[in-house]
Length: 375
Ligand SMILES: *Cc1c(COP(=O)(O)O)cnc(C)c1O
Image 1 (cartoon, helix red, strand yellow):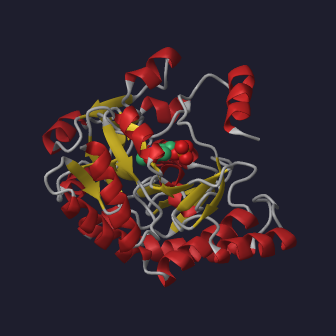
Image 2 (cartoon, rainbow, N blue to C red):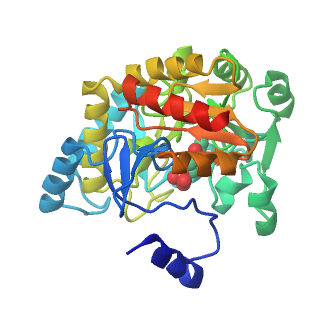
């Protein structure tokens, strides 16, 4: 099928939700995507920070074939070996003893809010201005963008916003009925805007002092993207609840909440598909590949290299989660597509979220193309 046919199908049948970029990849290989005509693109957004180990990684294909031929699904009514292995792995990686699986990031955020309300007996959740936590009614209530929220009001009561990267604003927002604070280490949808270095440590100090739970949303930053397994680890702190997804399944939909010191009781939460043998086997392999190929270190080093290369431009972010200010985000992306680079934008911020397997040579090629397009 060619692009024109796919566009016609969209116009006639697909929900009017996206202003898509004019590309239809049909095949992937490492950091590259190919369209039906064989045109090659650098994938510099990894399906929104998802394809962490690149496209068609041989170890991932092997795992999918092997696990699919044994067992795809059983539900949480019974024990599940890949899940038991993943429990251990996640607990070791995060330092948080407990875990529950979800099918995506939004599901993890919802589970985190329920866990926070249940275990504190309090109602209020504080999130940050410019944050993004998802689009279901609970997660949406914690999401800043009015355009996403307004048409769906009334949302869930008990949510309010503090200023991001502003510890005094947070201090003033916390009240007697505050259950939890949810925070992204780097604002993702807002275009890779990091907080100052000590921010998460300060949030941890205030939440401890006020006896409020700290939820860190690492759905976009987690699994190596910022040059740490999880960005909170940079500060040597521990959140009460961590939400993860995106890079965790490298394209297979799986997320999780990891937590410590709080818990559910039977009946509080669930979901038919959560933590399937196939999903967990995939996440196990993704973690192994990230470890074996030293992708966390690679993300940190390459991120620094890219930042330096753009020295004079307004570039911000952490590791391989970067934003570059442009005059027009959409038209910059369109020009990059003509030049064989696929990326996305938030407003006028060009967002770079490449697979963590990107190497220096390919990074340099992409830097060259972007600089030319931005001239
Ligand atoms: C993408 C994202 C979500 C939502 O995850 P989905 O998998 O799209 O449901 C939540 N929080 C952050 C920080 C995200 O980047």
